[in-house]
Image (tube, rainbow, N blue to C red; front, side, top):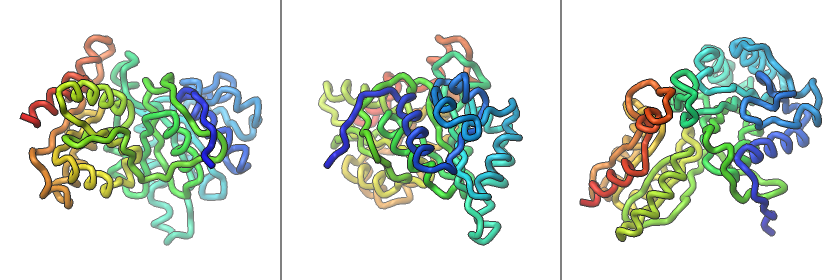
Length: 329
């Protein structure tokens, strides 16, 4: 029997996941700046302080180094902390704790320690928040063995993946792209999880695979509608989890279509898209390619504050469509 669904926002889906996991497990605690009375930087934790109290919804000082380090200590001693970083850019402030401690402790202690820690962070641009509050740095996180990296694109995925992340015994970086918070979608009610490390085909197609994640999924879905008018059938592959990466689904889709365009908001140069391209070129899908794999990513510059300038930094539907049309000849 399938769960009933409800139309809610991405923000509400995140809140539901946190609320349900806190109700199920008293060891799940929240930590972060302004997550209590204020409800979090983007409103995802509204009402949780009133329901669970200040012993489980911990307001922290403005010191990511301090509270992420505290959360790691809580995780290895039996708690399941969920930390909110107001902006993913601030990961750099506490990067030593994440990269050298959280990611490595299980390995360095021969498996005797677990680090069940989730770090939620608002990522990406599109809000005019300028260079220090608009970056997409997922490639940096994926480069560190021991970290899992998740970027959901829909309310359903946000809820199902976050519940799985909270239950995971490894540190998980959970990136919520800002422009998705107000998007709506059908979300199953009751017990519902999505396994980490499994991609999802958001649209079936036969001519080209658009491989993407986060808010670029919605953009690619729109482009697929345009391409259909030209008789081009585009498949949309939403990675959902970047590490571990579902190379099996990537290869299966590219083998079917024979063409691939990788799309991400992050800077294209040195971005995660390069890893996806390498996996295709070194994998079984390579022999099925009808055209070289292409990338469409952000331009190599800091994010401008000006809305008009900002638009030109990120991928646009026109740039994605042009890449596909060029590939199709």
